[in-house]
Image (cartoon, rainbow, N blue to C red; front, side, top):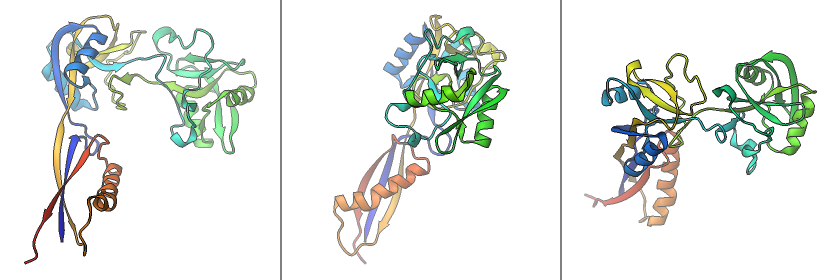
Amino acid sequence: MLFLILLFSGFHSFCSAVSLQYFFVNEAKTWTEAQTYCRTHYTDLATLYNTDDVNALTQLGGQTGSAWIGLYDDSQNSWRWSITNSSFYGPGETEFRNWSPGEPNNAGGNELCGEIYPNGFWNDISCTAGRQFVCYGANDTYVLIQQSKSWNGAQAHCRSNYIDLASIRNATENEKVRAAAQGATAYIGLYRTRTWSDGSDSSFRNWKSGQPDSKDQCTAVSFTDSGQWTDENCANTYPFFCYRAATALSTLRVVVDSATELTEAEIEETIIKPLREELLRNGLPNSTTLRLRRVHRANP
């Protein structure tokens, strides 16, 4: 009988919680300078996942003033499609764009959704604006809905009655959507959100009432507002929060009842690989490594 001990090491982010260790750096820097500092000395500027993280930062920081975190507004490169199924897109198709000259310009600092003009070019627009919209339906069909809705309202309508708001993967589809819009300026499935410096997909937000309120692209924690967030000019200088991902080492004992001695390759293929795939499906982070320790026990 063969006893195997699997050692798990890596970023500890089991279940929905992500274990991060935060650091307050009390040096005034621009957002970009703070990002560079954090990436050099820690992991990155702070990413937050819940109110516990907010509380952790406010306990580390000062009583007044503000401090940078990792959330920022990349108005050019943070666009994504309402249809999120990766199998829907071929190579490079999620990046297809057909912006009108000078767009996207984030006029007013709050243009987070996309629309198509009668000429087929695109514009960024406030998501609360009322527009007709084009839904994507079965058999690659496009349907104009001649009702005025916000982008979120349009998305909900399309998902309830069709498949989703129209995603445009190439120039051919762009022409189909333009024709389906019948001369109207209409919402398509393009939108964007502020992104985290480390590329995290955390959707947690803790904006102060009325924020974000301008074209300022970087985000700071306000200590005087109980850790709520404000948008700030990235050239401003503030202290900042970095993080380091906490690592953990866990062990799992596996008993293998085998009539023959398994080779390392056989153990990898028949035990470790399937086990790792199952653990990943159940929340084990991709950064985790699995190491094997073989323990032999003599029969009594």
